[in-house]
Image (tube, rainbow, N blue to C red):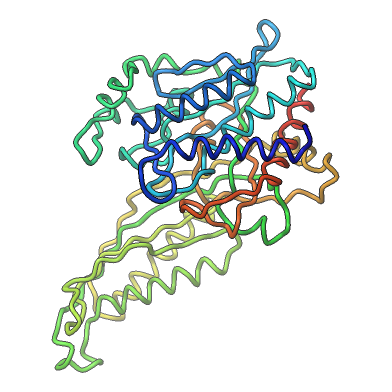
Length: 408
């Protein structure tokens, strides 16, 4: 098969998997559902064609294993099978298909690796059905919180019940923890979900780290008033204060490379056309590949928020509701991935920090981690128009193949 053929084969399997979806636009495939079951059947067929031994663990992770020499450690590859509602056909699932095809290619070439390889399709990375995520990799790392089994979906079904009805035994999850001494590392291949690679004219990027995240809930309280009777200089407009804070967050993020700040949700009260807004509840999210940079930005924006409130005569409540540390990728894995890209006579590999969280962030609790990004059309993801060109997927397969050969 030519390189082009491998990309076309990846597209074929991804189209079959995209059909494992709830009705409607794009792909909707939530964990522990009939659509999940249908996707597993397709993946089992693919893994078995590649000569892998396949089993489903009690976290709902489908594992295809290629044994190595007796006692050899295991390199783990993979990503997640689930999607957001009305998402695309590549996010997550492409990172399962491409490693399987890479192992198929190596076996057709008669290459025997001196270590075992497992390709994993995790059940739930997106956290759409239940208010938790990353259960599969957290179980492997021994960091899964068993209390999450009591969380419920919008129909009132608990995670425990959904898993049991799927044929799993959630009580065994602590026993899935892997011995770090037996794991060589983890590599995930994923569409970029952004426009950087396409703009650079490159198919492959090397992830340097996964950004840390912190989220703040901000409430600004002014005084609701009639829009036609209160002059501008006497108003205590909560929305004007929220707008000023939003622009301050944007300005702060633009000053520092890699820093991202987003106000994604606002609730305005009373929320009518002819009243000065008396209260605004808003979210402020900050992301950065460096935790010190992120935390400094959080402190700065909190100080700015207090200044805005004082100047405008507003009440202010601000609470940090979530914090997740950045996940640096292994320098050794980065170096080997760079060499694998450049061995294909490609220009120097583009290095990118991932602003999105991935299974890799949880696998870092078990072992050294690395990621490859694949260019996607117009940087679109989590949308029915999500698309990765077969040529880009072929480049991903060839890069991963060279990476595995290097490990010999």
